[in-house]
Structure formats: structure tokens, C-alpha cells
Image (cartoon, rainbow, N blue to C red):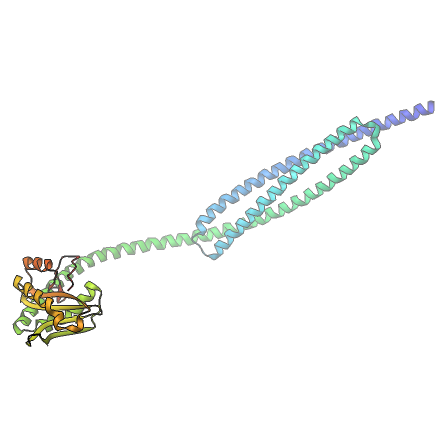
Length: 361
């Protein structure tokens, strides 16, 4: 019995010593894990601050690099990639911390069960050794990830340094551009002032030229009226232009002083006839217009297609022309659906009210 008691005492002493060693190991492990967790959190906070600074710098860089060349855009793209990689690394680190916390909780739970199950000391020690081995492996993996994170931070620092250098170059370019813009603004202001002066002078000259051209056309018209060549001198060069500008039609045939036999056998002369694809324009030119001139021309329009059968399928428009057009006669002609031409800046011009639509015969 003394031998058994002695063995029991040694066994109890061994158990007490084992529990002391296990407790010290547990306390040391918990202290190291808390210290490691604190370091990880501190490193994470620092990393987040660095990332925030990187984001802020990226925003400022994006605003400035929008006006720079392809090289700055490529640098901005690299910063975005680096920022994304850094965020991804932070997420991986946070996930690792969560797994470490979970493993620490499992280890604490296992140690509590070890205190309760002293009778199964050997089996529990085996499981504890296995868990410690797994924890050690996890710590090694964490160390590797921290090393990768540190390498990534070094790469980010290098990219930030390159970006800072590029920003200095950009600032210099912007300063040069701003100086150039100031010089350009000054030149534009001087040019604008000169243009204002030139515009006023051009307006004055244009008015004088317009008045001179109008007077010349009136004098020419008077001379043509005296010589009986108003149609040749004024209508013939003006009618195709007016038809194109007013109607958008191209004149394909133009006749002046056109004579044709009427049904009564007499020859009738028409001052000018302009033909387009779908229309015929008949002109009567007078040195001065009267209401009677309008009525006579209406009769000519009514009988035109009886004489010119070849134009029966085309629409007919009447155009009166004169050197001077009184307002009352112009109003009467418009009511009868006639276009009226008078002397203007470019030989003859339309005197009808804006938007006037002539009658079609």
C-alpha cells in the first residue's frame, strides 16, 4: 500500500505540475494572441488611414489628370488598381482576424473542458497538442499574409511617390497653361475691341454701299426705261435668282420679248417667261405701275395657257416689275395674287410682304 500511495502522490504531483504548465502555456498563448490581435488592429487602422489618404489623393489626382495626357491617365489607373488591391488585402486581413478570434474561442473552450475532464488527461492533451499545432500553422499563414500586406504597402508607397512626382510636373504644366491663357485672354480682349471698331466701320460702309447700289440701280433703270431695255438690263439677270431664292426652283428655260400668235391671228409679246420643272413664271415689266396695269396683266395670265399649250400641265405664277411701286398699287396687286418686283440692292428684289404666297393659274 505504501508503494501505491507513493505512486498516487507522484501522480497527483505530476498532474499538478502539468496543470501549472498548461495554465502557464494557456496564459502565455492568450497574452500572445491578445498582443497579436492588438498589433493586427493597429496595423489595420494605420492601413485604413493610409488608404483614406490614398483615396483623397486619388480624387485630387483625378480632377487634375482629366486635363493631362495619356501617361497621367495610366498612372491614375495604376492607383485605382493599387487601391482595390489594398482594400482586398484589408478584407482578407479582417477575415483572418475573425478566423483567429474564432480559433481563440475554440481554444478557450477546449481548455475549459480540459479543466473539467482531468480523468481523460492523456486524450485531452493529444487533442490540445493537435489544436496548438493547427494554431501554429494558422499563425504561420497569418505571418505570410502580413508579409504580403507589407510588400503591397511598399508598392503602394512607391506608386504614391511616382504620383506625387507626376503631380509636380502637372502643376508646372498647369502654371504654364494658366500663363498662356492669361496672354490669350489679353489678346482676345484686344482683338474683340478691334472687331467692334471694324464692325461699326463695316456696317457704315455696307449702308453706304447699299445706298450707292440702290441709287445706281435706279439710275440704270431710268436709263433702261428710256431706252426700252428694262427687261434685258434688270429682269433677265434678276428673275432666275429671285425664283431660286423665293421658291427654291431652278430655272431651266428663260425667254424675253417672247412673241406668239394668238387665236385671233395677232402676235402678242410677253416681256419675260421663266420655266422650271413644275412651274411657269410670266413677267410684265412697266416703268411705272397702276391698278390698270394689274388688271391688264391678270387678263394676260388668264389667257396664257390658251396660247402656250405646251405649259398647260404646269402651274402659272404672275410677276409684275417696275422701277417704282406705290404702296396702294402693291397692296392691290397682292390682293389679286401677284408678285411685285422693284429696284433694290441687287438689281430687282421682291416687294411683297414677308410670307406672301402668290396665286397659281
